[in-house]
Image (cartoon, rainbow, N blue to C red; front, side, top):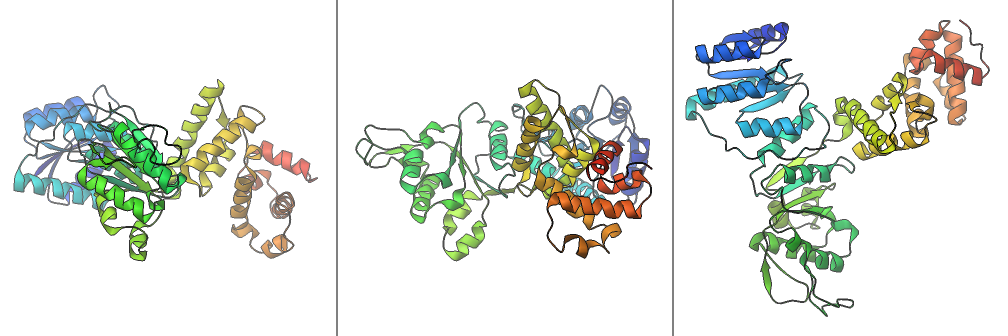
Length: 455
C-alpha cells in the first residue's frame, strides 16, 4: 500500500485529505507543522508528500520539498497564493506538480495516481536545477493562471518556439517576457516587434536588416532585430497579420537558423529563441489559406493560451490592488476603493481584459475627486453595466418594460429605478444593498433626485 504524507497548517484540511486519499486505498499520515513533517519524513518511509506551500511557519512547502527529494519522495504542492516565482521554484527544486486552492478533488486524485504510477514504473526522475529568474509582474493565482505558470516554468531550459494565443489585452507580451526571464537566456536581449504595425517591406527590414542601397532610403547597412536578439529571445506579436511572402521568409529563418538581409546575398547565423503571439484563430486561417500550415506548426511547438479576465474573475481583486498601488507609487499617493466601488469593478465583465482594467484604474486615480474612489467616480459605461445588472434582479422585473421603453438617459434611468425601489422597500439599508452602494452614497442619490431621505 502506497504511503502519503499530507501537510497543511489547517487540521480540517489534513483530515479532509486523509479521508479523500484514504478512499483511494492509500495509507495517509498527516502533519500540521513543517517540523513535524520533517521528523516523519526521516523516521518513516513515504511514496509521496502532499503539502501546502504556505504553512504559517519559518519553513514552507518548498523547504519540505527539499527535505523529501534526497529521500526519494515525490512532492505535490498546493497553494492558495500561487505565483510564477513559486511555479519556477517548484519545478527547479523537482516537484512532481502543484495545484492551486481550492482544488478539484478528481483532479487532485488523478494527479496523485499519476505520481504514484510514475514512481512504480520508472522510479525517480531527476530535474535539472537552473538559476532563479527575475521577479515577474504577472498577477493572479486562479487555476487558469496557475496552468500558465506551470507551462512557463517547464520551459525554463527549453529552446522550443512558443505560440501565445489569447484575446487582446490579456497580457501576451508579459507572458513572453516571463518565459524569457525564467529561461537560461534571461541575461541576453528580449526584442519585441509588432508585426501588424509595419508594412511588409519595413517588417522585413526591421527583422532581417538591410544592405546599403537595397531600397529608397537605405543609406547604409543596418543589422536586423534577429541579429540583435541572437543569444536571447525575439517576440513576434500579431503574427497572424503577416503576409504569405513574409511567412515564407520567416519559415526559412526558423528552419535554418540564419537570416539574409534585405538586398544582400550573405547569410548570417542567428541564435534567437522565437516566441510569437496572436489574437486570431490561426488553425482557421490555415484552412482559409491565409496562413501557412508549415509555419503554424513551426511556431506552435508549444502553444500557450492566456485566459481572458472573465474566465479568471478571482484575479480581478488582486489586479485592482496591484494597479492602485502602482499608480499610487507614481503619484506618491495612497488610493483606496470604497467597498461598493470595488464590488462594481469586480462584477464588471472587462471585455478589454487586463489592459482595460489597468487603464480604468489609471483613469480613476487621475480623475477621482480624492484619494478615496467611490461608485460615482467610476467610468459611465461601468456604472451603466452595474445598473443593467441591477435591473435584471427579480425586484425590478415587473417594471422593466416601462422603465426603459423610451430609451432614457443613464441619469434618468437611475432616477426611475431608485423611485421603484423606494416605493417597494421601506428600509434604506435594503435599497442600498440592491444598488450595491453604502448608506452615505444612497442618501446623496436620494437627495439628488428629490426623494425623502429618512427611514
